[in-house]
Length: 115
Image (cartoon, rainbow, N blue to C red; front, top):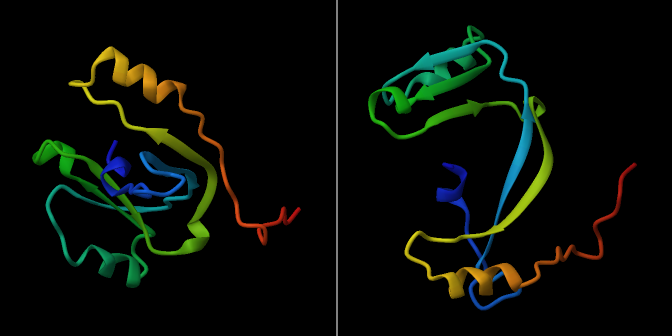
């Protein structure tokens, strides 16, 4: 998952070894589609021809497909996914130790339910 490339933990803190990503509902609208690195992709959106960009690097560079929106109103963050990484080289004991560690969400006291 590409989002994992951007995820950071909190070394030495409560979330040491715990990573997070958002699972969002996104309204893409009309896509500007490209298979190459295109620095001017945002110009199609700024000009009103498109609403978002699909950079399909999976097709040409065997990497990931990136979907880009330019307006915050096109996005609704629905879930926060907390996870710990397990690597192919990890032993069964290391994996079990990771699975036994409880992860609890700590939210600032000033966060309230807006509904």
